[in-house]
Length: 428
Image (cartoon, rainbow, N blue to C red; front, side, top):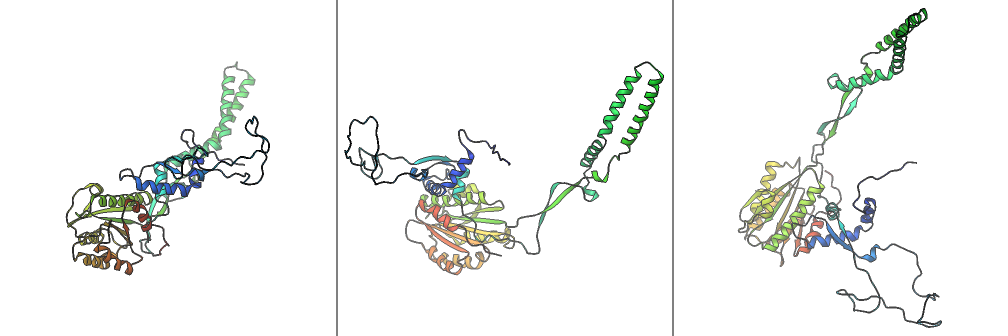
């Protein structure tokens, strides 16, 4: 019988194993609590852990007990109020509800919701569960596979140029010790005996004994010296293996409208959407690059800091941002090597006549190159002209193009999940 002992450090008075079991058991409740927490948080606190609450009635342990109804005889010791045969009304359910539903009562009892803390990693795990980049495929020619050579310990066979001298000498030394261990013990014993006899008085017996011992010592030392200093068995070579390099490289180009028609509340919702996207990509994918594009009448590529915090604004011409996106793809991201994704957020308002140009750019320059294009319109009113232009594109490129509307902060996370939910795998 074998035992596995979990020696991972636990939090004070907590068990890591029990906590993981708890999270799995109430996964759906915690997920709903996380969804609600996302809608209530500010942009800067979007990724942190914190407290979540689930209904206490859903965490009770299942037990066997007598159901309601029937006739039950009970003995209550010390009863001074009732006599045999007395009948009394069953207590009503509920109680003082405070700000909750129902009316106040002087009877009954209840329990508050169960609240506990989850870490940042646990929070993000529940936030991005079952999400992925759509249509992510292997971008590599079928007969051109790249490999990376890595060390994988040592081997007893190999080419001379891979010979590891130190390891070989250590192996040879260990072999000589192992094969001559008993003889070396005998040599040490003979030397001690010879030294003891040499200190005694010289007699014929001691002389003959010394000669015999020295002859035996000489034979043992010769046998030890016959062991080869290094043998083929001792040679150690560096073991190098070829590891295939993952070729599913991806780039996400984030395009955000910062024109004057975008009010501060709409800009905040756009930033929350892109922060969700940024956290999702950074957590779930190792080989991915992000490109940030801001636009009003002019479009420019910016860094992460300027993308989220710059206050620059102006008029609205969306085609410039799409044209810049196409130029970035053409100059740096070959579609034969990269999975290319674009996420655009705007209030849908655009300069007259520019929306049709945006449609042409998408059909002719962008959608033939990208794996997936996600458009999010953030508006509290009816759809704007860009939405109606994109509707025709959605019908034509249903697999590559998706569009959703956000009207309030509570819509951000559900829309994000709809755009990046797991789909059927698409083969290259």
